Length: 101
Image 1 (cartoon, rainbow, N blue to C red):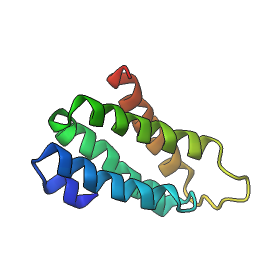
Image 2: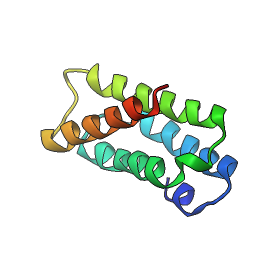
Image 3: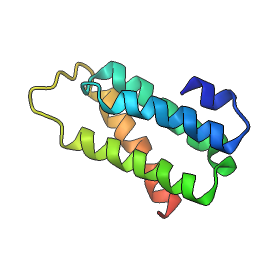
Image 4: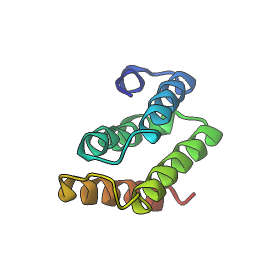
């Protein structure tokens, strides 16, 4: 994810983002994952405008996927910091709403 924040090429930004998203999507929902998800917000704020129309849509779909995954988390998941989870969900939902996609 950090590589995407350093990149200026829209396709490379999305490629790095997609790789990070694939890894994070398979991790257990816990405070460490949620902290990494805050990078989605940073990518949105600083790099979203560099993405093509299709890649913007793909980025928002990735955000929706993660939000859905968190909201439907297994009750056996360990979440040690509910504030981090709530803040993460709030910020990701803002991205989804702002995008209009």
